[in-house]
Length: 264
Image (cartoon, rainbow, N blue to C red; front, side, top):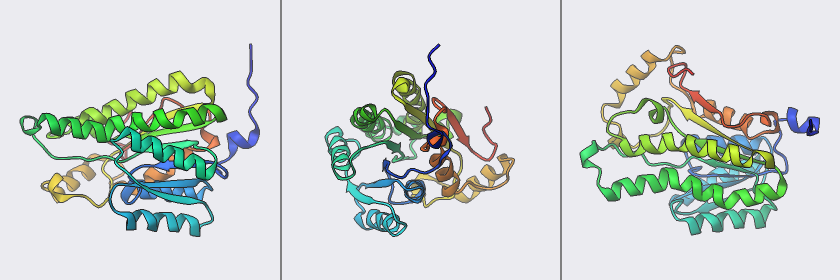
């Protein structure tokens, strides 16, 4: 029986010094917290945003101030060419791409028969296909280095099917399918893939997509044994672990971060 020898510092350390991470949707909310966490662990971080350069630059500056490298990238994550170009820019600047976190998403509130074909395609391209584009561009770099971390930020609605979000429910469930496919196919290359599914989390929201938000929040909290909303740091802390050497034997996992609402 062949036994692979792994250095102790690889399996015990949370340090990401020398690694490079790409985080999409990193200008605010969960993505921002993840980018800051990975930077605090020593990673070079590519802070990806869409239109708000000021937000992305502020996150990158905070990472640099903490002693890690950072760059910003404004792109349409639903455009595979832009995604591939961003990955190559990151590799050229930092020497590798080792960690990808597919976090960016849009969550329109639309009853099923109000979802047009173009609405459906736009949400799937942004929330699900973009994760494939990112993995497809980054995995060759990880394979060359025989080390990699793929992390998908899904959501509770992908597994409990919230109403009026059929497109997003489909994407969030599909992300974990993509996770498992990558975990199986690339595990022998030293690459892990995992999914985090945050439950109700205290973030800045587009209120039009959350009608009756205050009442919804009271209901959410009533369903969670821990009795509180999640925080962006709750998600970032788990992401920081999964990105590290300490999680070298964790792959294909779905982590529900819902204060106990969803248990598996």
